[in-house]
Image (cartoon, rainbow, N blue to C red; front, side, top):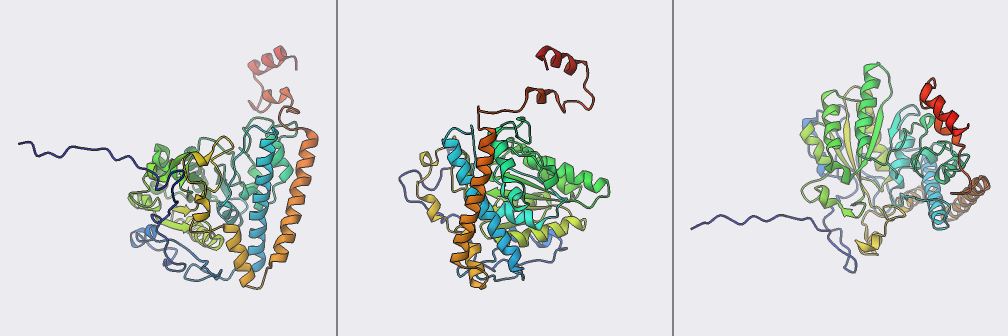
Length: 409
């Protein structure tokens, strides 16, 4: 008798589909302050519990609690809140601009603003960020001109990238923002390589790389972690786990088996799992990992647990694959509201001041858009065709010269 068990293939399925009741019971969320904070120079082997906890600072009452909490300057927190609100206002306006036909494409970071903003404000001005397309808050927190962001989105004659990048794929070296790539898997490899070069040249700068949780299923992720571990690259590797990779839920990348932070263990790297909607927790974890990198203790893998409130892009309709009310059930709340409530609890903010700031930032974005509109939106204005021949070679070779001649410019 053949007593062998018939094999079956497991196909991960989301916990709720459109029309069903949303649930996040599968997301393990410890209480704020429950996860321990090890010494920054602790050995990786003594930190293997951390990928299964969650660094959280803000409790339900907006108080900073636990070992990762520290005394933060209220002005620093207000600047963080302002940058997050400005990011949201900017993105809402650009989303409407897309619907009006002013640009071909746009992506929002709604619900994830704390990550890019907090890390931008925490790392040094000359460190280098290898971003994904949901950390435009990094640029806004550093004062990058909103009008230049809009011109890039419009690909108009004032586009700082001369029409050479798709909308939202910004590049701003002077702001520590490496050229954005739609091929997200490349981010970790580039960040690790840049960090290795910095260490090789005896420099002091460190790197930060971002990917989404879906990209952890790609080979680029594993190759980058191998190099980061072997060469102790001074880099922070951030996995933004926003529960959805385009229309594919995180289980396809292995979320059902373990946390994404736990992938670090196989490479001998420290792994942190962090509340990505808690501005203070993002700052604390980033400071901890940056100190390790700056003192030649190597890389840290951080999983930021958050939620993608909007669609993947303007080409995506999330109601086709998840319950329409799923965002309101996300248990870690809204990063803007949580930081706002913390400042109010400290006596350093108020609803009235928040409304005033919101109105001020809305008008500032409107003014920037009017300036960009005057140059021209999609199809109304574009960079000079001459730009396609510039910056190809340090010194133009015969092919570029001949092509320019044929083009008549």
